[in-house]
Image 1: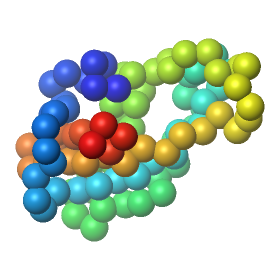
Image 2 (image 1 turned 90 degrees about the vertical axis):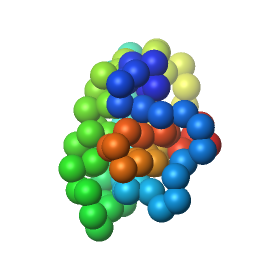
Image 3 (image 1 turned 180 degrees about the vertical axis):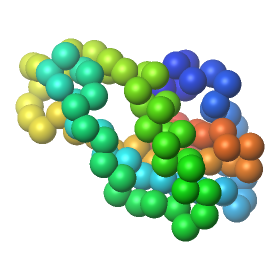
Length: 93
């Protein structure tokens, strides 16, 4: 996801406090393309970061063939946004 969004991500330690932390659940098709994205947690402020996160996921897709893995083909990702509206996936922190 970071490689697919080089201008919209950061590495290193997340700042305190973070601007927003949207949490999304992504459901995939067997070929790794996105079937559905659901917002599990909306930030109180900077709600535009939800769409930024959704757009980042679409740029990173497809995620590879998952058809041989057990269903459901879902994963959850938290996006740690800084004040510049750049994100770091929580899985990398």
